[in-house]
Length: 455
Figure 1 (cartoon, one colour):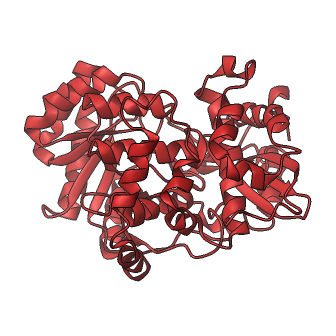
Figure 2: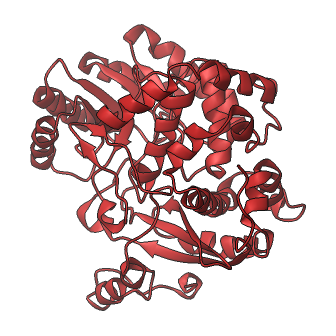
Figure 3: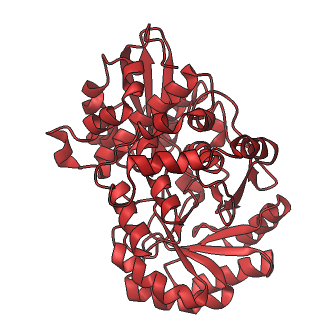
């Protein structure tokens, strides 16, 4: 049933640069991102009746201020609109905000512009779910196929999937949906951990964490690689010894290698039986990924990628080419839930498993909703599908993800699980938050330059 439009005129879109000092502990460190401060551009959308939606896009610290400025530049597309009208014709709104005749020049549908779009759209989806008093995954699962498909812009992807095909795919999976929802509510969704494998961690800490996550029921462990082959083999061997031969190992190079280098490096690591290599080369090199995947197939190693894939068109090419065996959508990288749904539909048609990228700030909270919907309404399977889990920054959210026995438990509160707790913005907004002022005064971080003073 359409929403009542009364009070749903959007009167304010606020955005904050929020950063957490994770670089102090080496958390999140990999071959290319050696000192990340997990951060986000955090958007609050408010209607005239006081209803609010919360959205974010994940960053690694410096540069978040650029996304903040871009969100502010995009307010013109949303302030004054009625949220009910947006939701009733969401695909049209999506095209308007991503394809403005002037602003699309700084994209189109990629980079900083698309990250800003994601934060805005995530706040709108959170608002919609709150208005319907449902968690986002249930809002999506309860939609009629026609309504869900109406939120997607199919431009550029109809050579792989059309609206009509998408509607039929969703209709075909109606049978058994309520039982699958019951399974999710009873048992949750399987997870894997990256927490054991950051490059900045000592060998002792890695071993300690492997034991911790084994005791928590995890069977899949991911390790960061890519700087030094000898060190990688030693660290991955240590993880393999800790977890045993019956558990699963994955490795992630975070774009560190050339194509041939990736192939040779992974052949050297093959005796440790990793099931995938993640982001082996440039995130834009579709054919390079396909070459790597073909070369590593005899070793039983698949290619996983997507966390920095720019848009549905790039995903289309990766899926068509055989360049990914594991599709890693990111809830804050491409254009919000609308575009992510398009990627799920293409992946399902082309029979590529979706295993979302998570971690960071709020990504675990968001991607659980997407994967829950996928199982309930689209793929109808959890076979060889996992959600990444990184155990940090959850304490800042009003509805943090809950992982028990290595499974994501169903989020039940209305929304997209993206609202910060009271006080988080006051403490961690950069650079004027109380925590940042204290750390800057203590010399833990340099004072910001003029370009960063946007909050």
